Length: 292
Image (tube, rainbow, N blue to C red; front, side, top):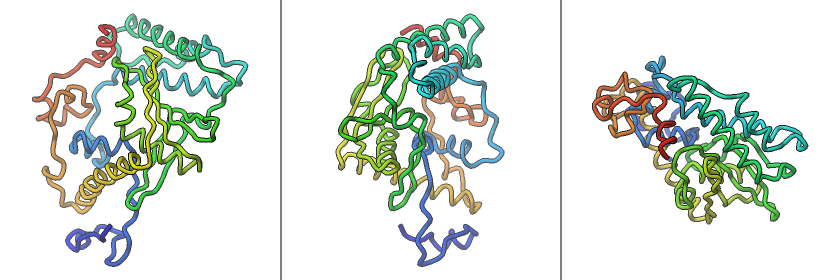
């Protein structure tokens, strides 16, 4: 990648000299996808300090956190203590209560989530140790340092590893969702690099239904996903540098209004977002889960 343009360099961006290679751009899939979804939300999330105030906590976020935390804690127990009922107990112990309509709704969703985890773990061999749980992995590319935290990394008999991502949303993912996921592909590339093991298979484990969506990548499909990440990162990096240089404008971080604006943490600071969609209640997503 070429050195920064003289116009940017003259405005005080440090560490960029003509003829010197540019520093690799560190990023996570979440950061890249936030830019892709809405550059204004990206600016609020990653660049503005202080950031605009967040809205209230979301019940569905707390639900996902509670389930993920319980499963991670379960794998850290001695194998003899890894029972399905203990997994349900861990959900109850670590339950995040914020965002619900009332205590009754929180307790009802908690018990449902505990049932999901109990049923899921009933089909898991507690003696099979994962390679990693909540494991941070990373990999450099010619332009980036990609990194992320993987829910679970399993080992196959042939020595390869598999990326496992837990899901708690209403809709069960399909195999094509696993294949299309930029985040999962990045995790696979980074896991292979970090662990020095082949990693081509990625899986989405849907706790509400106990179903698994899986995809087996080839070298070419992973390369295309890395190229996609680099393309998004080029735009984000240019915006970051303009922001640091004081030359960013509203056009640098355009808003992309959509129905998802109703769920945005920063809608109070975004008139276009407020006009695009009504404010969602913090518990609406778990209400929709009930409807499903």
